[in-house]
Length: 137
Image (cartoon, rainbow, N blue to C red; front, side):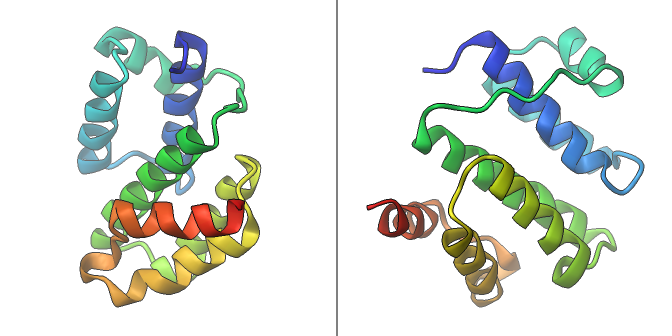
């Protein structure tokens, strides 16, 4: 189980991911607020993180890093629906965040490659987990 510092770091990282293109769109904001609720982060703390990011805390658990990567995939797909180009800027952004989390570049590349074969470019969680399990073993 992750602690509060790690939860704040995860959420701060997602906010940074959404702000990569300058501003957070309303749909991204609502998605991030939903993630905050899942992580038991109050709306006040969430609002604070938007303007005051916390430093990155590396997750020890490989499975938690995979879950976080999946959240970022979902967030990227929200951006794509509203004008972002998933084929370049979004992919590079996601790839770099995945590497920063300590995930294997082979797994990240495979997820990015397979995204196009799924509806709305959303890789199902079980497929994503299998990709990372294969590379992790």
